[in-house]
Image (cartoon, rainbow, N blue to C red; front, side):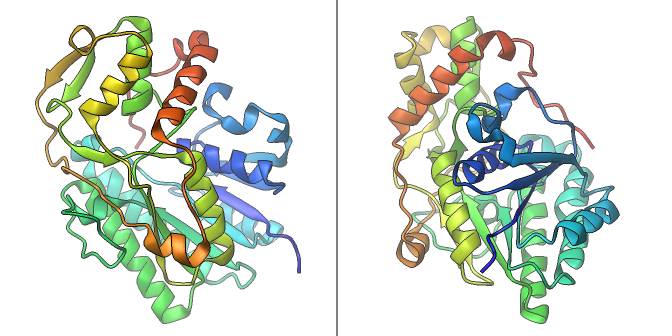
Amino acid sequence: MAAPKFLVLGSNSFSGATFCAYLAEQGHDVVATSRSAEPHAAMLPHRWGKSGDRVRFEQVDINHDLDRLGELLRRERFTHVVNFAAQSMVGQSWDHPDDWMMTNVVSTVRLHVLLRGLDFIDRYVHVTTPEVYGSTDGWVREDTPFSPSTPYAVSRAAGDMSLKTFVDAYGMPAVSTRAANVYGPGQQLYRIIPRTVYAAMTGQKLKLDGGGKSVRVFIHMRDVSDATLKIALKGRVGETYHISGYELVSIRQLVEMILERLGKSFEDCVDIGPERVGKDTAYMLDSFKLRTELGWQDRIPLSEGLDEVIAWAERFGDELAKLPSSYVHKP
């Protein structure tokens, strides 16, 4: 049987870039695509080690370059396509909801139309989000009804539901993943963990929406990458798999853990701001299906992962100072 051949869409995203690095470390050759040119190497984990030459980048935008993407797919005959490409910021989706709908619904559905006609694809992995559930009450499984509360979540729910119809009607070999909340070295500076680390290291004040009351499970992206690869190779067609640990922490507790490691006090480093509109109180994903069906388990505790992020920020400190510290919207 031929070795799997991977195409990763959205490879400049934190999740996509880390997954590319993980695939390369596992001995897989990867074609990585994203709509923008590759960012600084500080944000590309596959550029940090010896396996980076296994990752080949091509700039492709699913909103504008589907014909070129189709040519790439037919020429290379990828067996596995993993899609991280999405408009993914929650708060900003209120400002330009039509852009979120275009990428996460219209262009995603067009992508699925393209993929359903390619008989050489063994598995398409659709990376989506627990935001589709809204705020959860207790640990939820994959059959939880959707109750999205932001334009971002609505757009992802629509894309997810459309994909299900393609699986049901055409037998499209698709599986979906939902992970919460991913973190690790190389994550964009506007996300809560690197933002807290960088603010504390540079003497900036961190604005904490609502005082950090919401509760999350943070999971290291290497653990998520391990799960995603298992799902790509052995996941059951039509299924959705939650990727999550069980270590609950409030955002305030998380910030306090980071500041303690850096020798900083919460009072000196944090300003409390109003809660963000539509922000969900908790995501608690039960990953029982993934653990029992595919034998996955998370291995990196939050304490160890935070130390890794701090070490990354210290290593690339000079470079990070030149990179965007806030989200820049690209329509």
